[in-house]
Length: 265
Image 1 (spheres, one colour):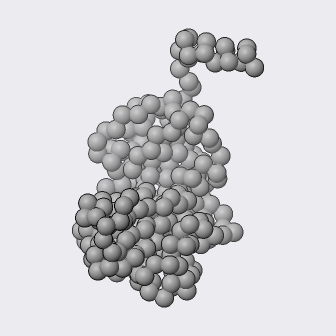
Image 2 (cartoon, helix red, strand yellow):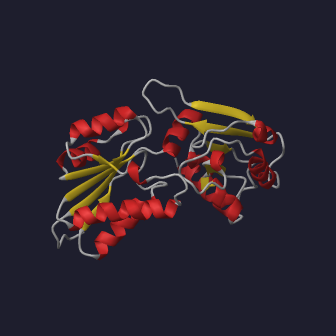
């Protein structure tokens, strides 16, 4: 995008398992920024960011117990925008992928672009990318549908049970406070299980997944029958993978296309 004002923004991701998943493109943005803001989920990544850019400053101080998510995100976006409008080339480094479950990054980029500043996002390693590798399924086989778990229940999302289903943040159903409580809420998990039982049998296998956060760690992968999910203590950042049911009978016309291609090869 054409740059008409001094000051710019690049938002990057630091990956899931720490600094070993930072791309070379993201590293260049981190090192050359006039100002670096970050949200890190571990002290090693935080120390590494501060080493790479002396201007590094956390955005985590904007979190507060009882503070609504939308207020926190708005404050983060405002701080970043103010720095760019002050003429700085700004980089924001966040845990995971900078566009997945990171609302303020989208808000800041859209606002700055409307005002004529250069603003962009670089892709990063995300939790679902790690899940595909660790759990071992190919989203290209049967497709994959992805929902935040509370949103899935709140809006009664429609989905196809013959395709893979991912539900994010199943351990914090209905939580609006980013200072997450560790209180178990089995009744909320039961509500999720009841919703899924409309489509899947009680013994349908599901996987609860949490990626490792440091190199060399082992990811947490719990495979269990759907009906037994309610009794588990689930990490706030766990993702549930629900494998697909048996496939429907294929469309004859499309199947003929594939058979024609095989016959030619």
